[in-house]
Length: 273
Image (cartoon, rainbow, N blue to C red; front, side):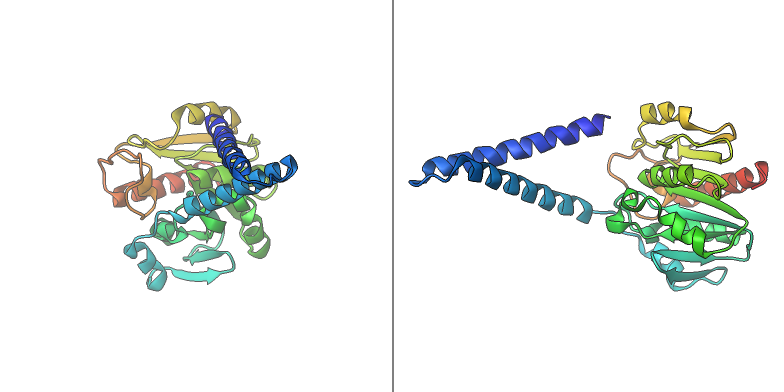
């Protein structure tokens, strides 16, 4: 809710400044245009500023590190294939698949190492390419994967904002989705009891809003499990470097991802997914 109010305030400021500037220009003109034209120009100017600001915002992102991209280029244990709107990370498993929504403003490829570890342990993964690196812009992207591929068990997962998108898609597809795995995230939608949920976050995560996280527990299904990784932070679920505002991890990225994979495997076994 805080971000909604901040966004509305920012819009009010932008349009206020636009009308002020166009008003000053109108006063300077010898032949003043009608007030309606002044208002129209102010609206157009405000929208133009918003568009420019938006594209600048989404353009500044967290790129995948070279070691993450290397998983796509060469991997002996799993096969990484680029498909329409996603990467398929195919291991020896045949029954269970996980569709992953990346965090906001993060290259999808940054999560290839984590997906590789899961595929090596029997869970095939589909790593989505979010439009403009914002998963909520295509919240139901997993539906296209589920419709195209045949797996007995489907898990939807995501990091940060990607987790919100994954949970939203799961809530609308509870007839085919068996479980939700959230990494430093929470569901904004109520998840029915026919879906199991696993929530994982690190003790040093300073990006995850804890108040919102706790409030969102009212949306959890009865089969829910929480795993807190001691020493883990927000960014180390992926391979994209340090994230602004995040805490300092006291464990390595490799350790955090290994613990994440272990928690997911235990979750799948515990709830017989």
